[in-house]
Structure formats: structure tokens, C-alpha cells
Length: 494
Image: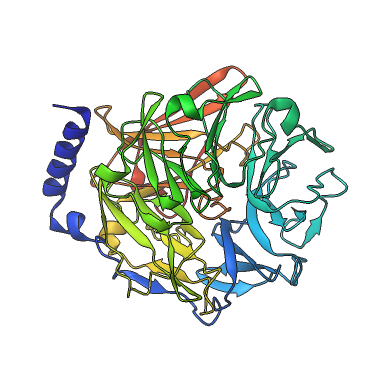
């Protein structure tokens, strides 16, 4: 029996033991209801990113717009209020298509990078009292650029966050954080890729202790996978079979998302494409496109995607944003793929209210009730956009989850790329999550990772940190998930 067949059998037995509510609860999208539609009703939204900017324990939402505005919706016990303008975020300007939260100065609160046409903003968070743009004084001057995905990552494992910026119309940029200033270093490191990059995903592809980089490239360009060798990068996408060569100019990669969809302990990734989207299964460092056999080979104008276990059944589901043209009008044509032991089925009908995205998608448990809610954006449609949906699972189903926050030795959320694994008392792997550098459409969720379970009373939590000494694991045993449904288990680097 293959590893995948064993996985399917175990899941089926667990579902049978857990009862009918575990196998059916959340299997459709009926449980999602819109939140404050009058608040989230502005068209032209592109990127959306969750973070707890005011340190009150819940997820706030930033959204960027074609108009150049960046709205920040503060979450007050599950109720949202727009506060971006009063805190100093732009209300107009060049089109903004990238958002990334990251504590670049290590002061304990998340700062916000905004990538816009021919410029970038780096808004330092002043203890949630306001945001000040410090990009120019710190040396971040992208120049003539069509900004796409921005990522806060520690590519050199020196303990602080560096900034990578994808460029749709020229060389990509990498700004190294040297404490008091940032230094642009992409060319010196081999990352000044001239292809038309839209999506960027960082993860330790070869498990050697540092972050590698996948690039989704547009306009018929091949995709890239840069291996990080002690801070020097080389593109090995061709040798690994993930370059997607042979595309014409109307095709290309747009967004990417990393997750262990088959619960075998290594990180796979999905690429949303103009053309046929791809799911690359990781088989010990070798990758195979299994999108067709898994049921997620979307063909059309897929823009972005994000993994999330929306039904708390222990495996990662996948929302893919897509659109189609009706004459000159763009309409959402998105998909929510429910994962059933590594096989996927689309549970999102085209007439569903949840089919409301043509660009951004980000999961977060904004009301801390134990299930994943979702934020979506519409950038092309003239209809009301940027909706947020609450997941209305049963209390029993919500209780089958836990959240984990990974922090560095100072207690700061700077360990992007760390991997979290959860095991049952017998040592069987229940799931793997990555502290993500971003997905969706040029954005990310800077919130704790959340695991769903069929049935888990006690677990072992293992965090893999990427360090100058390589991959280092920390384990917490005899953890009760029920204690960490509405608040995160914090794992501090030693």
C-alpha cells in the first residue's frame, strides 16, 4: 500500500470514528455569511493582508486599491472600523498592488510595506497610534517599477527581516536589512530576475536551513525556483520540472501558495496561472505536477490562491480566485476546493455569494472562535468588492482546532519560513503549516497558523526554525489543543 493510500485509509477511519458531523460539517460553503457588507463595499480592491497591528489579540485587515488608497479595518471584538486615513495611510495615489506586514525594526509591532506603481511605502507602526513612511530615509527606493508581491523574509538568517519586491516590468529587488538602513542586493546575490514576476513564495525547498524562492512569472515567461546556498541564489526550476516552459504570451504564473496538502510532512505548492494552473507535489525535494489527478488544474484566468483548512477536518483546502470575461466586463469565477485525503472537489457554485473574488484571498480566524474566516477582493469588477465572510461552523466543529504563534528569542514575530508540525501521541503526523511569507494576491496573513483536527485530545507541537546553524527543532509535548482554540500557543525560539 502506498503512502497516499495509507493516508486515505487513516482519514476515512478517523472520519467514521468521529461521527457524521465531522465528515459533513463545513463540507459546503453554506456556513459562510457576509460581514458588514456596508463597510466592505468599495470596488477596485487588489491585495488584502491580515495582521494584529494594535496588539489587542485579533486580526485586523489592510486592503489596497486601484485608486492608491490603503484601507485599514481595525477589528474590535469582531466588529470592523476603517482607521487607515486617520492613522496616516494613503487615501489616493499610484495604483497599489502589494501589501506585506512585517516587524522590520524588531520593536514588537507589525509594520506595513505597500508596493505601488513606481514607488513603495514603508509605514513604520508607532504602537498603533499612527503610521509614518520611512522608505526613503531607510534606503528603500524601488524607482521605476510595477510592484507586485512584496515579502518580508530573513534570507540570510541574521535575525532581522529583509524585503523582496517582485517587479512586473523589470528586475526584481531584494533589500537587505542592516539595522539602520536597507541595502539593495538582488544583483549581487543572483536574484535580479528580469522576467515579469507577479507571485513570490519563500520556503526551505531543499531543507538545508535557509529560504529558497519560487517566482510565478507572467507574459509567457518561464517560472523560477531559486535555491539559496548560503545567501547566493541559482535558478534550478528547469531541472526540477517547475519552470512551465512553452507558454505563449497570454499565459503565465500569477500567484503561488505553499502548504502540505497531503500531510506527508513536506511542503507542496500551487501556482495560479493564466492557462492551466499547477499543483506541485513535493516528493522529498523532487516535484511533480499533480494538478490534474488531484482535481485542481483550473484552466482560465486564475489569479491567486491560499491554503486553509476551512472545515477543520485535518487537511488543507484551497481557494483559487479566477475571473472570466463577459464582453468587456470581468466576473469572478473562483473555486473553493475541499480536500478529501489529497483529492479535491470544488464546492463553490458560480451563483454562491462566496464567489466574490477576482484577485485577493486571505484566511484568518478574525473572531477567534476556532474556524477560518476569509477575506476576498475584486479588482476588475465594478460591483461592490472587498468582502469578508464569517465561517459559521458548529461549536463542536470549531473546537477541533488550535493555533500556534512562532516567535524569535525576543518574542518577536520575525521567523517567517518556520515550519510547524503537529503529531498525535503515537507519533503520527497530523499536519504541517508554514509561517508564510505571503500568498493570495501579493499579500499575506501575518497571524498565527491554525490546525484543524478530526479528533485530537493531546498532541506534540514541533517547530522547525531556520538558523545560521541549519534547521533546529523545538518540541512541546502533551499539548491540549482545546486550550489553544481562541488564543495562540506561543513557541519561542531558544
